[in-house]
Image (cartoon, rainbow, N blue to C red):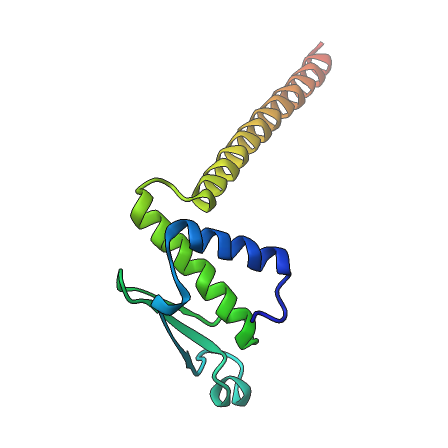
Length: 136
């Protein structure tokens, strides 16, 4: 079904769909022409995917890749994440990962700022010591 996608990823997606009770028969799928940069190729080929989950009315459009097969997979993955967020009401795994990375970067930048300030202080002390030597 998804030729260019690793079987493990497809299996993982199918398990998640089964866990949430999303059936392939509940999905309305159509292919749309892409938009944006790409010129003739994007205007002629229908590589974009539109998915609608009929029971919930959740809609997804995906044209991240040039391949229709890959976009079908990505659209399903996005749809599953959306429905999981709606049903579970908690942060999705993806949001949790982003939050963790943001916190790590914040810590990292705080450390970098402290290091920069301590380097500045050392530099100013050196300059002050040179100034005192000239005055003597």
